[in-house]
Amino acid sequence: MQKITPCLWFDDRAEEAATFYTSVFPGSRIVDVRRYGETGPRPAGMVMTVEFELSGQRFIALNGGPDFTFNEAISLMVDCVTQEEVDELWARLSGDGGAEGPCGWLKDKYGVSWQIVPRVLMELVGDPDPVKSQRAMRAMLGMKKIDIQGLLDASEG
Image 1 (cartoon, rainbow, N blue to C red):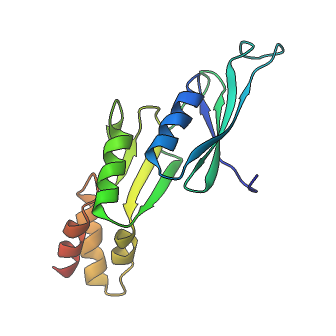
Image 2 (image 1 turned 90 degrees about the horizontal axis):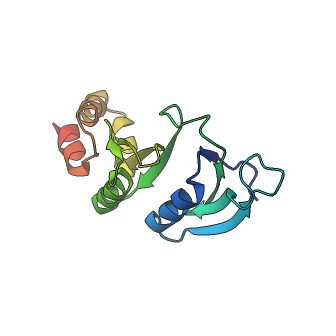
């Protein structure tokens, strides 16, 4: 197990969510499923945790009950190289009950916040030329899903 593993708290959809996430990211897999025993606190036999891997990163999904829900204070940031990758991840993660947000942020159908970020965004907003950097930032602030060509065009003025 890696040193630090994010644990995502679900009410009762941990296995469903892990299965969905592993279908979205190539090279991902379910590693282990554990069930509650007789001592609970959930019904015996119910999925307790699902350990899964997304692009080499391990996560735990826990069916912990309805006490806690997700919010934007924690998000999963995905580094994308191409517009096609941005488009596909955006569609799959925001679809089927998810919600688009500003500046490359979205919530999936389980309420988990994601940032779908093309690598070029970080390069452009970090440009040593402050004029170019601010143009790229201004363009990004006006977007929901990030448009790479729109960022490049804005940066160049």
